[in-house]
Image (cartoon, rainbow, N blue to C red; front, side, top):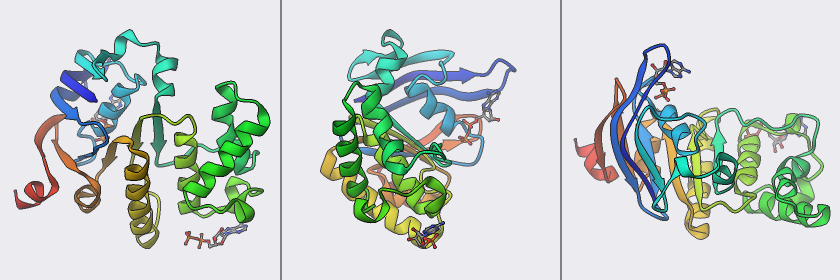
Length: 228
Ligand code: ADP
Ligand code: ADP
């Protein structure tokens, strides 16, 4: 589903972030990129949705070279969740989530209904949370809103960059489990970044271990990664 062939990124200042990366993410799989800080994980993720353009190699989504797809069109099919979810502070969370279906041209009532459905799906009961603003939520709850918003256009692919990084350990375990259930139920293909090997092994169908210098050191099932 997602395929990287010989992908590299050297930034304008000469920093080599990613080198000669080959990686295939099967449909409906959750693949985790793990490794020390600065080893090129985020750069790799952002090349898939073209927030960053590679300086070598090619990236395919469903067999299509992403450089041949209009970036706006591309990102419609790719949900993106980051650690510091950028919610609009002056809008309640329903409006935050409804923004995406509105951009897709859905009328207001339909966009709102979709937002309520998504909030419920990520475990935020609309009868309790619908009127709340981002500052009235805990960190874990804000991450849930971020996931709801990323799912709003029903993209087949999700990119997640340290999605549970800012959440305390107890809440994190719960979010990980709930997210795995959601991912399987909805059949999403997920590429996720973490620096936490435990999280990688717990969540990944496959784990890509990056080494300093942006090289892939290992790509295997979690048990094999732990055994190494
Ligand atoms: P990770 O996500 O694994 O922490 P990143 O992909 O963020 O790593 O960064 C990989 C390397 O590229 C690091 O050395 C980082 O400092 C560098 N880097 C990231 N963004 C830029 C940029 N815009 N310009 C120059 N170097 C960058
Ligand atoms: P968590 O364990 O999920 O991190 P918190 O301890 O941050 O939760 O919050 C506990 C509860 O208090 C949550 O259900 C959250 O919705 C509620 N809460 C937190 N901040 C506010 C606020 N400013 N206004 C209303 N409710 C809040």
